[in-house]
Image (tube, rainbow, N blue to C red; front, side, top):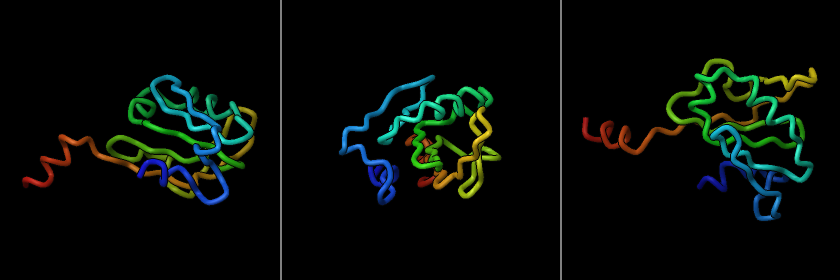
Length: 109
């Protein structure tokens, strides 16, 4: 399922060995051009936001996020983020998942 989340057609494809890295506790999924500005985007996020970011992927001027809990304000789908160079990336996907323990509590209510 996570593979499908971060494999938009014609974009990021882990099967082509573009790779992934762990940076500041966030899984970074790389595309073919290995655009390191994605690390600047993480560096410019407030700590309270990074604490909930699980996975980030960038491809061709778009960025996707997978969050634990809720999607923070300013990071919703079809919004935009700016790397420090002044470029603008559209958010193609921003999805939140809930911790397993919280999901069990929700089902028992």
